[in-house]
Length: 276
Ligand SMILES: Cc1cc2nc3c(=O)[nH]c(=O)nc-3n(C[C@H](O)[C@H](O)[C@H](O)COP(=O)(O)OP(=O)(O)OC[C@H]3O[C@@H](n4cnc5c(N)ncnc54)[C@H](O)[C@@H]3O)c2cc1C
View 1 (cartoon, rainbow, N blue to C red):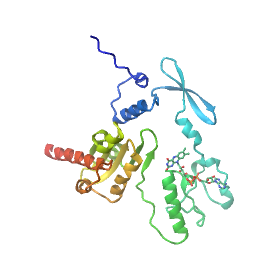
View 2 (view 1 turned 45 degrees about the vertical axis):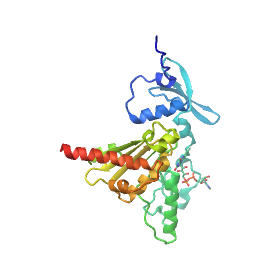
View 3 (view 1 turned 180 degrees about the horizontal axis):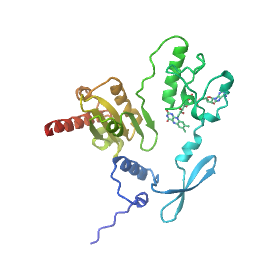
View 4 (view 1 turned 60 degrees about the horizontal axis):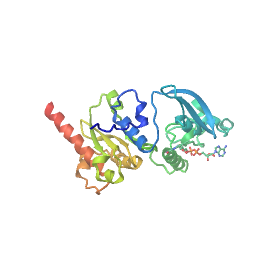
């Protein structure tokens, strides 16, 4: 008897090469589940404005033309600082590239009693950082000297699946020639991950090999932008792997991913010690 042929999801058909990278696998798997079609290696043929949203016309493989609300749709919503209506030059406030306002570490402009924060000063231009910058600026203006904003900033992308990170990446550590150990934990092997049905989510922790300090946290999956906060606090607290080994964490929780990923890293660390 012939085995019934597995139906390949349409999304997968367009990929001309095998995807090995865990990141892409996670993306595509989630896209299948949510009926979102992801296309890579597609050529942009033109841009159209439909209902005030920029839509990229994508030339799909086999000359099939399809319409996709692409990243351009998001881009079209982002206000450009150069389009600002505030006439800064009237106050003598200097601006730099793309009309961004130059500020010092206290968020003062070149006119010391005029402060700027948020999108107006550029990177990272997030709601989270903008709020903190404005708070610091207000404290400084009122002479309630506070510390400067932490340089350890999380980044969150509210996509399906969610993505979030803080600290170093493998690439940044390789550039700095810093030896590191990677610890991984998969949502599907975590009790809470199984309850919520996330088959592809994962947590990746980066520990400095020299002292096993946590220096990078990467999460992709359900509630990634929440899960990353545990790592953010640990990175800010200069915590090492021991913190997660010793801490007793609630069960079932996604927080337990930290213990699993840390134990994975320690196993690799011990193996690397034995090998040398
Ligand atoms: C589509 C999109 C999604 C985003 N998603 C996220 C996210 O998930 N997480 C995140 O952290 N950040 C996100 N951001 C970024 C975040 O929204 C901004 O970084 C943040 O709002 C910046 O705050 P702000 O106070 O500097 O500027 P704004 O929030 O833009 O506030 C500026 C205010 O000034 C007003 N204004 C402008 N000109 C004048 C004038 N002449 N007189 C009086 N008032 C004026 C405007 O109307 C506005 O209310 C997103 C941005 C976009 C566009």
